[in-house]
Image (cartoon, rainbow, N blue to C red; front, side, top):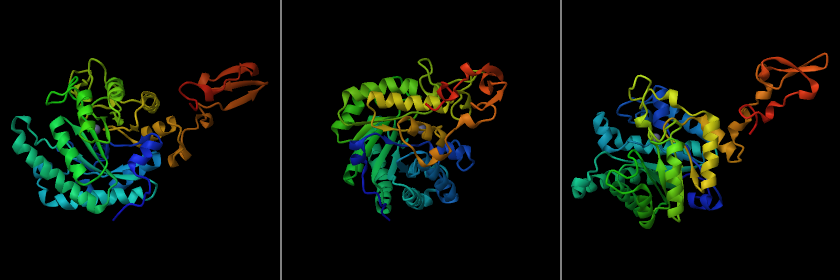
Length: 366
Ligand SMILES: [Zn+2]
């Protein structure tokens, strides 16, 4: 089954920014279809309609890439949950679901491979062989089902990322390789994130950058350095959480009681849609080519980001029109030629000061 889009990822990137959307595992866990802990995408086989629905929501909200939900669908992880026998079926089905929904729009389908937890730089020779075999089998199935390019993501080790890149190139596909940035400034095998991205570019990656772990505040400064160092396309897919210089990753965020908020108690740290829209604009200003979102992502963010980038997407049909809200809008009433605006606490105002809430910083259009 091949998808039907005529413009590949590289052509789209040459024409402008490509928007992506991820966070499938996190969102489907919140919806009750994936078990937190192992985070294996069993939902692909157990509730395929739930996967299709989330693809469709991201598509309608403006994602131009349907990422096949094969994250952690590798041999090592499936062994942990006793579903190793479902490995091939799960991988093939995930790509089929992504294709089915991509055809509802003009979206690309990305195959997806990720960190395996099997790579060990201390035993690089033997573990590289294991990792390579896992990537090869996953991508063999993905290519047979039909993908446009591959996203290798949340790479903790440059060494593992380079194996992924080699395997992607064996299949002759465009490669987007992004690093996790859990540590302060270097991969777990000791390469500065910026230097690591340069090495990935030199090894043939088409798109390099960061995904997951960091919110926009702490991801963008690194991405800016990557942008000024590499010549290829750059991707930024942060998590929508308020990470800070003191707590630069969502793994390091702490609740008021001092407990780790990751991964199940992160809600108090969530960005709102306006803040994610601001991220999209900042990323564009820096020169990021592939702008997306990772764990914590949801359709309302994706739509706000798409609109911030100047697009009107299918879900824009239902974008906020706060001027029509009975309590918050610019709904005004005439009482002896005075108007009242509910956003200003129902105060009666003379006509001359009739407010226009469409230009309100939070409630207005843009
Ligand atoms: Zn993520």
